Amino acid sequence: MTLEKRRHRSDLIETFKIINDCYNLKLDLFFTYDEGLRRGHSKKLYKKRSRLDLRKYVFSNRVIDH
Image (tube, rainbow, N blue to C red; front, side):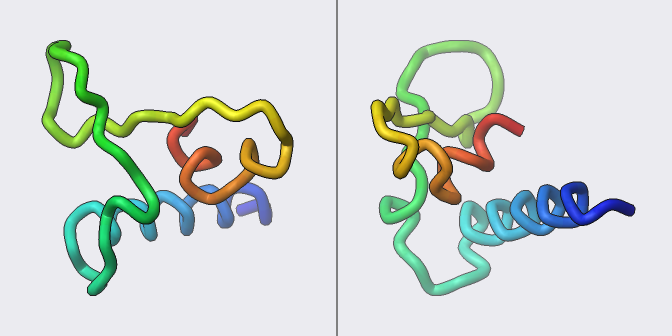
């Protein structure tokens, strides 16, 4: 497995743990839920818009695309 795939996998695992309260963290620090009334599950994440590259590649925005 390549390094990129391992990083991607570990990011998704950490996201799962944060969303399902495995850590003693506030969810609001990392993610916000999508408030739209669309079909699907209730834990759909919202990606914040960003102009700068500094914010584009932060953990929370990087994970939501995948």
